[in-house]
Image (cartoon, rainbow, N blue to C red; front, side, top):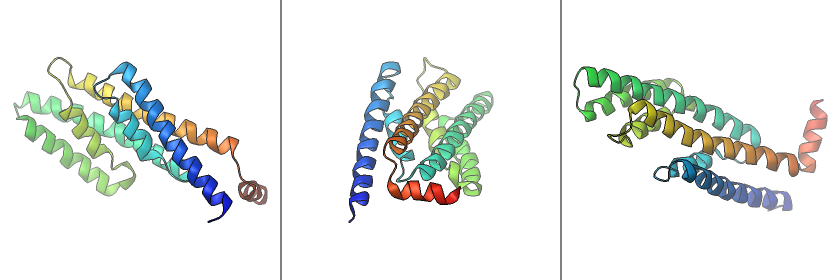
Length: 168
């Protein structure tokens, strides 16, 4: 293993740890019961290189918003039609799974719809629950992306400099 590979591995590990810790610490200030989603999301989007992290962030962002919207929509229809909660969950998963099959990059929409519906409490509306869960997830992906960009800016390797110079 080269020094550059070791350095990349160590930076990746530290970046993941910092992303999880910061996301959880900040999320805990807003909702101590569900800050775990911020931390998990920070780790889910973390990749070895910046372009892959950016791609992961874009899919996670779109999937989170889509899954939350599906959860809210299906919940509203299900309530109107007097469906049991398991039917609401099932229909939301069917819709998001069909979309995820066609667009694998937003596969997280399935988790998000389930997360919104399964973490709702009687004293908080489903739209507010969707906003809370989505905010937690988006906090995690924002922190992970920010730390990766910072890492990339501070620790650009000679190989990366050579790649950038040959592309110009």
